[in-house]
Structures are given as structure tokens and as C-alpha cells.
Length: 203
Image 1 (cartoon, rainbow, N blue to C red):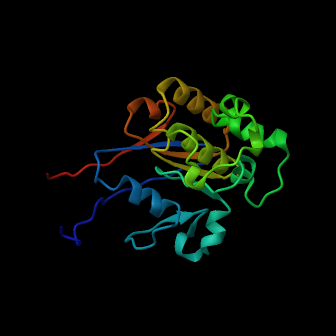
Image 2 (image 1 turned 60 degrees about the horizontal axis):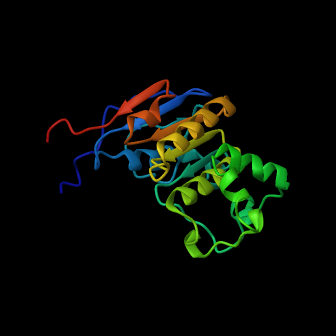
């Protein structure tokens, strides 16, 4: 492949507080790379990127992380309890953790476990289904209370009825949070007010 050929160019985008941006396009058009750039993980880009009118490159990585949460396509979970996987290094009451689980559409699942919040997870959450893993990593991201929440096709293993409830929850409960959704299913982007469709001009 020609490494000098940009995946995307002439992208001009302004996101305001509370915006919902939907990012779509075929596989290989740079959706995940765009998200990694927007959340500060990939700094090898040309062009100008500002956050609060300040260049991204002026921010330390940890400083950007304090504003942003990124939910990957492939969930990573610790070999620890469900409670600790969500709270990590923050003190949360059980009531707060249940709220994050409810928002992520996972509350009823965890209520059905014998040990509920104290349920131990195997490495990579091996004792959960794919959809449960995705929703648990979403709950963890919500627990960071981010100003910007990046969702990289992170509900692909969730059934459409549950996904719809989660999307409605996020839209209604996170009014002041800017959401950036990457999705292959068009229905996932129904709550977005801005859209970015990536695709090769010449195939």
C-alpha cells in the first residue's frame, strides 16, 4: 500500500458541547484511526486539531484523558470483580455503580448473577458474553464522567432491542456530553445530529 496516500483529507469539523457525531463508512476508510486522533491517542497527523481552542499537541496525554473516555471495539476487562472493573481507582457507592450499569443496559444481567457486583471475572471477562463485555466496558467509560465519549462500534455484539435502549439512555442522560459514535449499523446513529461518512473517492 502507498503509505503517502491519506486515509482522509479535507475534513473540517466543529463539535460543540452535547453534539452527537455519527461516523460511518466501509471497512478500511479510517474510522478507528480518526477516533484515535480525536481522542489524542494518535498524534501522527497533518492538519490542525483544537480542543477548547487549544492545539491537541499542547495537551499532556493524561490531561486529555481527564476529559475523554474511549470504548474500543474489543473490550478489555481485568481479572477482578465487576465492581472494581467499573470503579477502577475511584470510590463509588454501590448505588452509583448500579446507575452506570443501568445506563449501559447491563443492570438486569448483573442482578441475575449470584454475587452481583462482587462477581469475579476471568481474564478478559471470559465468563461474560460478547455483548455483556461490551456493555461493561461502556459502564466503565461512563464512570469516568467524560466531557467527550468515543464509542468505536462498541455495541456490535448487542442485540438491536438492547442497543436501542442503551442509545436512548445515553442521549437522554448525557445531554452535556459530546458523543462520537462509529457504527456499521445505520440504526445506531439515529440520535446523531452531525454525520461524517468516510470513503475512498477512487477505488
